[in-house]
Amino acid sequence: MRRKIVVGNWKMNKTWEDARSLLMEINRFASTHKPKCLVIVAPPYPYLDRANDIFMHHVEVAAQNVSQFEKGAYTGEISAEILKSIGVKYVIIGHSERRTIHHETNEIIRDKVATALAHGLNPILCCGETLDQRVEEKHLDTVRAQIETMLDSVSSSQMQNIILAYEPVWAIGTGHTASPHQAQEMHELIRGILKEKYGDRIADETTILYGGSVNSGNADDLFAMPDIDGGLIGGASLNAGDFGSIINASCKHI
Ligand code: 13P
Image (cartoon, rainbow, N blue to C red; front, side, top):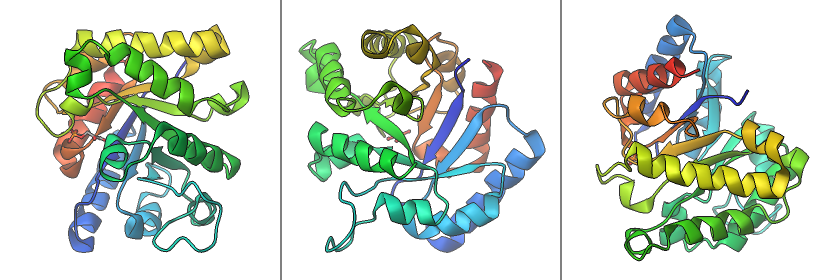
């Protein structure tokens, strides 16, 4: 059975003082409730190591990005090897903010996936269409092209280490969540692509998260859909109470 997962993507938020309080609150929630779903938090890079110390075994830590390069003269970049060496196990790759603001292409993202896997990191791999692409009814083709390129050189056994996340760009930080029906349609398509490439077992076992304005009010309806296995949460993950409610909503559907 595939794992239910809730990931909090903090993006570029919180000074250390605020971050520390939030990490401790999330740790307290996880220690008390012992959620059956996997909880992962992706704070800014400088807090990864300290987050790992605070969480111990209750919550996992993810980086928000990784370099596609191995090592060397890439000022400001962080390699998969460096992340691995401080005990990070997960990394978000291909977020739409990196695609648009930092001009990451599907090919760059494919290379990031390769280096992450080579160093034993588990990619949380994002895809999703823009509003224009949806209005022009190109959303299914867009996401298919993203998935096919990003997974181009990923083998069946490597696929077991990948978590996928569908995040429609028009739903990120806008308050306009995809309806459960819209999200389910896309998740079903993504699982279908995995079936074509890797067969039924891998497709059935791959966790596919939904992200885009998930909050404590809409999480339950989204997570009730058969192909939605949890969430990639932005804004609502910056508040321990909201994040806890979303974790509870996900655990309900195990
Ligand atoms: P919001 O939940 O703030 O819409 O952000 C979603 C997201 O981008 C998570 O990676």
